[in-house]
Picture 1 (cartoon, rainbow, N blue to C red):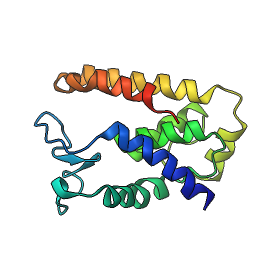
Picture 2 (cartoon, rainbow, N blue to C red):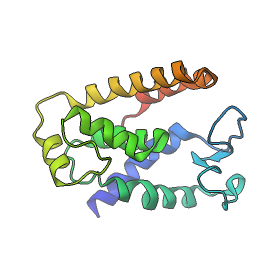
Picture 3 (cartoon, rainbow, N blue to C red):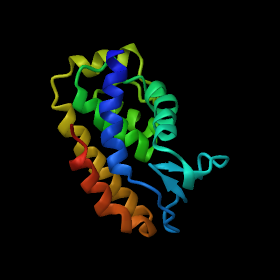
Picture 4 (tube, rainbow, N blue to C red):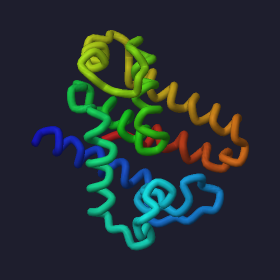
Length: 161
C-alpha cells in the first residue's frame, strides 16, 4: 500500500503536466485527455475520459509494468515515471539503465534496482539532463515537433513533489 500512495503522489504531478483534453493536429499522439492518447487507446472515448479512468490506465499500463517500486529515491521515481508516460516506458527505463551501466533492456529487475540504489552518481540530476538532451535531439531529428520542445523542457523542471 505504501507504493500505491507513492503512485498517487506521482500521478498527481503527471496529470498536472499532461493537462486535460487536447486535439492538436501536430501532436503525433493525436487526440489526448489527461495524456491518454487515442493513438494508443483507439477504442476509448478520449474526449469523455474521466480522471479516474486515466489514473487507472496509468496505474495498470505504466506504473505496474515499469516496476519502479524498489528504487529508493522517490524524486527519481517521479522523473522516470513521468518520462515513461511522455516518451514511452522502455525509453525512460533504458535511459536510466544506461546511466547506471546495466543491461538496457527496458525492464527494471533486481540488477537494475541494485545498481540504481547503490550508485554514488547524482542520478536525479543526470537523468533530468539526459531527458532534456533526448527532447532536444528529438526536436532536431523531427522539426515538426519543435513546437513542443519548450513545453517538454519546462515539464522536466516542473516534475517534482
